[in-house]
Length: 388
Image (cartoon, rainbow, N blue to C red):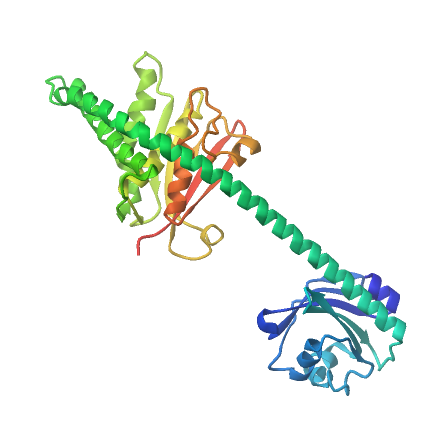
């Protein structure tokens, strides 16, 4: 805008080169008569305007008082200049690290106009200011990347510590599970149906625990993971009885009401993903447990399996396992640190469960998105590639 007013020129735009300087795109356009800004959107290609691109690459200003007949701009006349009524051009190159990365284009609408030297110098100064802004922007991006790398290094140190802890705990965990399984086997065949049912739940839980122990050993790098085709809805259905037994019956056994309800909705015919079954079980169990523990009184945990939207996956071939609860919700601060190892808001929490979920999902090539609102509830969306 300042440049347009100072030079009394109708159109001032900033153009950026594409890869290999084979095209150039208008990113910003100011029109003085209307006082409006736009993103321009126009793209010019080197194959269509070779002389103009050659002049831009020579790293000098293009001063075309008569743009229709100037050797560097006359090829623009039919496609670009004439439709816009442009009679004169003053283009100043933008340099970054010694290379031409774009141009500030001053377009005079009307008959041919002579540009004086001080106007050419002013246009060059404007281009230098654009280059300074670009350089500052590039520096900020690099600083942000360095900070992210530092955070990543810290995360890796924490994850290595989690791995050592997991390896040490898994062996003792397996010993405890073996004892529970021996005690539960007679209960599963008891004459009393209620006792037999609870014995079966105990056996299912110990078998799941054994698979989790294996998962812990993988985290501690003691055992390999095996990739297979896993059906998401079947995996959730298999674990719902365990979640219900842990969270729904606990209050009923004390004479109180059932306060947590678990549901499953599947919107995909065959929701298949490639993973080790224990990885999927770990995701479901941790997210289901986290959702149930977020409910202080009566509430509901919903598992939803659906196709990913374009904004979630940027293409086809992705599934979403969504876990919703109507619990206490989380603040922005908690959400920002949710997947950090050892970070927890629970009095008896370890901060390992959700960190494990995050690591597994990333290992599977997916990602986790969290939405939460205090006193309303939370949504965890696990986005995974489908089986191919």
